[in-house]
Image (cartoon, rainbow, N blue to C red; front, top):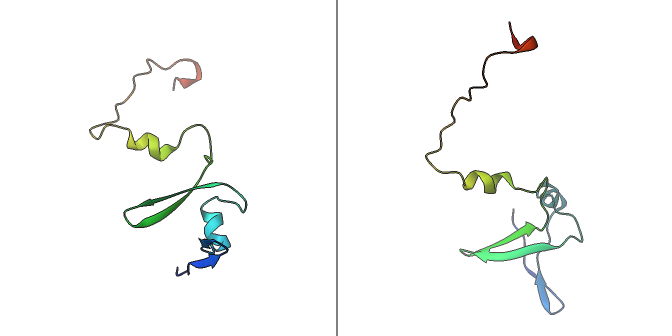
Length: 82
């Protein structure tokens, strides 16, 4: 998507299309964090979408050699018995 940097008073601004904001879960009037990395401007919401943790951050913290192991829950009980 192509946009143009425009002068607004003593600042500069970029118009962001509504569908791009909706897909980013950012609302008009909401505070955002703006940063620059590797020649890119990054705009991030200041709120988490759900819960206390971000799943992407949690997965990135997992060891690269992690393997899922089968859990032994013991013998079947009650209606678990077939």
